[in-house]
Length: 219
Image (tube, rainbow, N blue to C red; front, side, top):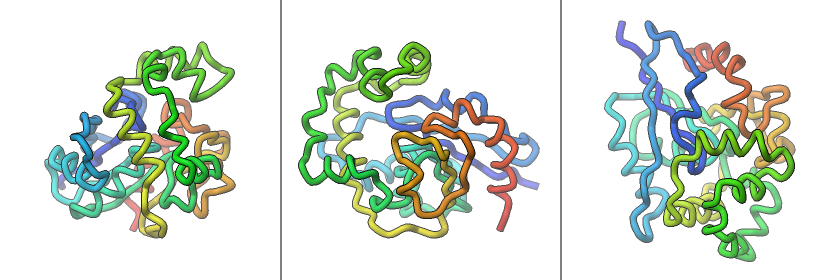
């Protein structure tokens, strides 16, 4: 029996090392890790998604994306046949964005984010998460891979301006009830992980290891 290829896309600016605690049965699944690449000037999200699909070497794979990676794998699925698309700590349409992101789109406030300051790891931790800084800084030092300002500007803009306004019901959504980036109150329908935060790929890995196989395999 051939193995099921499962491709993992990390969250915004993160490296695939965020998946180091995720383990699937090697007799059944083949885990493949994707990485962010520098966007071309003025590259659309759709064009970028098509470019990333060139790194997929299997027919009909499962795509799993975290946060912005969840948005990206949904765009990738427009270009290739997929067995299943699963998003974690993400959204299935811009309708699920929190109010601050919708306001950011309307006012273009996202253009005011000081990207050069964010490239400083400690400032990024403060900007993104507020109080629990020390633990989060250590995580970011380990997992933040893409510190290129061109990528950050492109990524933030393409999250805020994502134009999908209808949910694809075939996309499976796994979400924590303590997510502070995409609060659960805005999410329409999902598999809820109790106590899961926006970084639950790191600290709810036991739940994911136990449940991902059946989620992938179920019809």
